[in-house]
Length: 408
Ligand SMILES: *Cc1c(COP(=O)(O)O)cnc(C)c1O
Image (cartoon, rainbow, N blue to C red; front, side, top):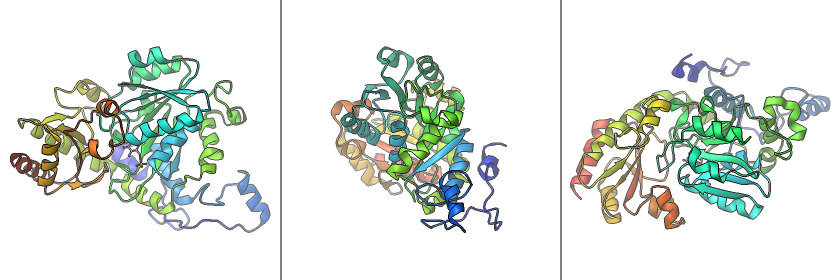
């Protein structure tokens, strides 16, 4: 099946009992069973069924299956937020004394998380851009994961996961990819060697900006050596499912960062139009980036622009599609604010992946707690605005930005 067909018909059966075309919202906490014998079996994974929504729920299950199939994974685990997914994807394999190598231009919340993990004895080594050259010298026996955003938000740097995965696999280290901004529409990171893929599904997967959530997808390809990864001994029997089995039966369940059934349902609705939206978003963003870059005093960063160092990778990995985020330097903070105030259509909001165009001044908001060095590594300057391009008619977006810039 091609992408849009698979979104609707791949690994998805609605509700087999009733014929409902969508899996309904099973908005309950607990599931009753006819006997204690039956519940005992369900509790001990000896019979299929549901017991309690923190552990599993049919609406959430259906969403997880759709994501796993979209990303070509062997399974997926949904979480209450993208940050919960990032956190648990790492803590499932890390312990005190371990090291992680990560990109310095990551999403602000993820950078902050790595700071929080210091208190638990987990050290993160940051590099400006994840590449073979930058990470190879930092790998030690203690390195247990490499974490990267495929398209950095808001740096918009692109990681060559083909080369990076080859390097880390030679050191028996897994590559964890946050593919939120790329989405399965641009690429399946697993195809190029990613071992674990995480998404903030609050963004493009949901699409309408109506539910916060996250998801972890397991490729099933990484060989977890119990000597190096503590706690994996008892999950060896699950074979290629050992990471996801450990996750489900361990921290994910016990932390309780489950996704609510209603939010899972909203995401499942969103997924169905992911292809249509992304097609429009990428073409809008490409055209808007070229338009904005033609103005004097506006310096645009977007991966398909000829001046972007990531244009070749965009062509090779994403078929020339650059995603839906643009950043632009406007000259000063004052000019950036003025431009945002002049805009009529975009909303001033801290989110990406909405159908509506959103703009934000990252330095005074998302990066307000970051050091200047962290800001610069993330491509965030005093005069930077980030545009999360929406599905509006491109002529309207262009004329709105044109009048806003001309008024500066
Ligand atoms: C938004 C975002 C997150 C965090 O997701 P939440 O759903 O807001 O918790 C993580 N990574 C990236 C790249 C994001 O854009």
